[in-house]
Image (cartoon, rainbow, N blue to C red):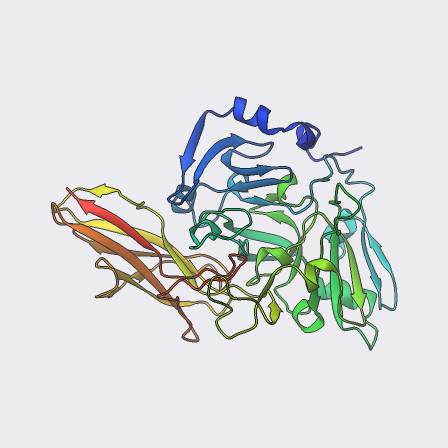
Amino acid sequence: RQLLKGSLALGLGLLTPRGLWANDSSTVTLPFERGRRPLVAFPQKRPLMVLATRPPQLETPFHIFNENIFTPNDAFFVRWHLANIPQEIDVNTFRLTIRGRVNKILSLSLEELKTQFDQVEIAAVCQCAGNSRGFFQPRVPGVQWGNGAMGNANWKGIRLRDLLHKAGLADDALQIRFDGLDQPVAQVTPDFRKSLQLDDALQKEVLIAHSMNGESLPMLNGFPLRLVVPGWYATYWVKMLNDIEVLNQADQTFWTTDAYRLPADPCHCVKPGEALTSTVPMGKTPVRSFMTNVEEGQTLPGGKPYTIKGIAFDQGYGIDRVLFSMDGGQQWQSARLGKDYGDFSFRPWEAKFIPEPGHAYALQSLAINRIGETQRFDARWNPHGYLRNVIETVNIHGT
């Protein structure tokens, strides 16, 4: 049997909180209530911030985003919904099934997927819907992520539409549902399955990925196959994908009808404590930007030029420009955009300024995409902590 190298050591069931804390060598404290996080190295991962262990929820330390426009595989964040995750996969017997409202059921091996279909690469950001949830005020339930529940990678695989065309879609095909090898521990817990409308699933950028950044997917990021839906939140990026079902009616499973829903009003927000009257499903990511080489409370040498570096991204229109402010948004200057790695990728940017000795600065960045969408000046609130794209502020001092 051929197993993913190192997967036998994954041992998720053995990673109890007690064992993890005993091996805790350092911590990171995020700038919000109860923000202390241990740094722990899981299999195939460098030390990452641990938010939970069963199932594993691991956040990328933010300084990683300043080191490379592409997030290293061993630093890529981890988010699972179900705790019964396979610890070994036989690549010789693994099959991806395409079934349902198709003319021909397909059962494809990894080798067939890699050799019988065109191989496509795309740079794309994968961002958890709850990224930055820990900053919501008032606090909301859920995994209390900082800003590191995201990552940018070069994904390689097969276009989903090529597989669907190979199977042949029935005339009444309406939605495509995806399921992975992870399973719930308790029978009452619904299996994690997600669906896309047919038109969305047939977009050329939607892939069944077997590689990221030139290597096989890490086990914790979905080996051997992962659905990649550029521009959409990671809830749709089903991991350990082994089943694709074509539906002729709207999916009625829990993770579509009940979970990952937003208030139906235009801002997808409500006032804290206000009851939700109607909701819509989570979808694409809004415009965001971050500064990557400064942190809250940092001091910089006064009187010397300093280059602020950052990243920006959106749902796939591409970043048109980034503005930078050092006075909390009263005045703005244009930042310089770096190399364009594609419409779905992080876009690097930088801006220069000279901090004066003894002065305080509220640094901000604001990204605008090619259709004029931008970031919010106010932090919209919803009861699940989704969709944050407020202008981020980093307070620093000149010395």
